[in-house]
Each structure stands twice: as structure tokens, then as C-alpha cells.
Image (cartoon, rainbow, N blue to C red; front, side, top):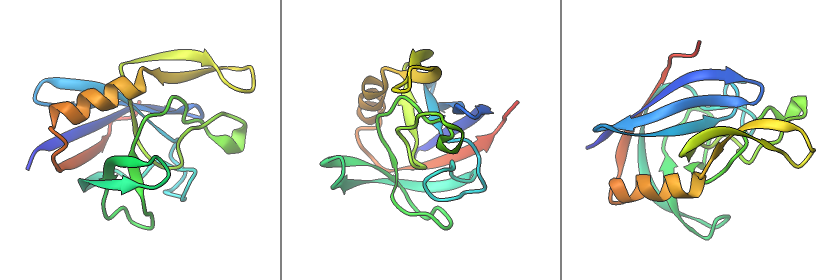
Length: 146
């Protein structure tokens, strides 16, 4: 089974940024800040997870699903731009899931505030799915947060 590595590099109230890498290919990642694995407001714990495809009624399509996250369910890999701490007023498109991006930038959020984000997320997700041919994989998440 293919191993895919998520290296978390930086975490602030505007999200946790990292890189997803395998076989010389890589994409930027964005997750929520660390809030002790609290559902809907925190990134998931570091560790190893099986990831398979499943249909998401919310997104009305098949997405990658991260299995066996302690205390959590339905952690998906899907398109998004923002993953800020909503308890501190930042915008978020994620509730514990993981997104990919082609680049990191800043964009004015719906509150009119400049917020750090990932860009070209849908394109990055399509590239990743195509590269893996939509096959299952083992996700290894490592915290290298500085």
C-alpha cells in the first residue's frame, strides 16, 4: 500500500500548514489549528491512518476518507481555502478535515479581513486523486511545527 506523508510545518490561529508528499510529488496542506482533537474545531492527531474512498452526501461525490481517527468520524480530504480558528473570529471551510492547495497565499475572507489560505485547492485535489488513481493509501502525519 502506498504511503503518503503529511509534514505539518506551521500552525497559527489561521490554520496548520504543511506539505503532503509521496514519490517526489507534493502539495500544500491546510488543517485547523490544534485544539486537542476537539471535533469540528481541531486538526486530527498525528499518526498513521488508512485512507479510502467513500461517498459524501454533503459533497455529493466520492472523496478520500481518513479511518479510525480517535474520537472523530467522517474526516475527509476535500477542497477548501480557509481553516482558521472560528472561536477567535477566523473563517474556516473545514471542520477537522484536510485540504490541499497548489500554493499558499492571503485572501480577503468573508469578514473583509486578510487571511492566510491555500489556493487552487480543487485543482490540487484532482491532481492528487489522479496521481493515486483514486486508490487507498496509508497516511502518515508528522508534526514538524516550528
